[in-house]
Length: 453
Image (cartoon, rainbow, N blue to C red; front, side):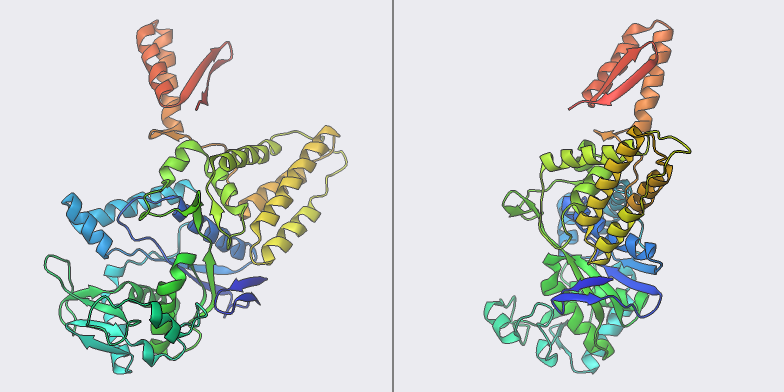
């Protein structure tokens, strides 16, 4: 199995330290709901994690929550609610969204505020080793103390200084970055040897990853927007803290999500939330749309492409329902499995893996028409689809907060009203469902429903 390493700029043979793969993926800063860019990142790494497990590895998957940050403080002040309440709300929302996308839960979800003792220990050690200095109650990492700075982004530190901006006179070098921030009036703070304050962004991931995975990680992942400065800084401080290189054996980064010509981002205000996406399309369709593009490449958000993915997901579901002929000639699915594995072994080339599944679906349908025994091929389709996270269970409806189980309950209630000849109440339920995008149809066989746009 080969994986593209951002650090080396090429594909490398994947040889973990032992049978347990130590994998860390940067999590969200919890001050708002998740958007489609988060779905892109976490679906991509969910597929990678699932495939590693399929190959027989045990994966210890750690994904953090940044639960203290300028954005969190500002948002809590805007809304007039305690920052802890804001954090708990959006952590809960995160799990709702990721579960709905069928993303497997991480082994551990550490939070920055729960790791303050470890963070302080790392900062103290960096200072003792001459890699950090104190300035007006804050602690900064000295980039000049780490000659390899810039190796992840393949840049020279001197060239990077030309474009760097100095946020204050507290720093000795424009590239230096905060490890510990001195407290400001009205902000949450924790005691430290340098005075009350809170951790900088980059140091959080160093402390959390090393505490839960050890001094060397097999895989560290995140979006391409994190390569600099976050991962460059994280690597520098981690290797200075432990004295061990490499901190990460393979750095992996997924491509940007684009809406039109622009990157989808909170700052640009052009977000599509995960909840909005799930109101329109199934989790399988969203996943198929995402992995039909190579994970390292940009992905352009498109409703047309999502609809095409919905059709593709439905074809897979239907292929599991068609009937063949027991005892007939068996359809050989092994070549499709071989193509699937070959694709995924080549830097998780999910588009080619999906192409193998699409061709297997065609062969299942052809085999059914020819009266072949397709049961083995159907089982293979279900197995391989599951490897990359498809449920193939049908569309999970959630329109305007209305879930499928609620829809069925309302239809049952309407039928009870119809039986009692309470037509007005029955019509009210019908109209309520229609406003939520659900049309119901009565026939001698019973009442059915469908999504209308």
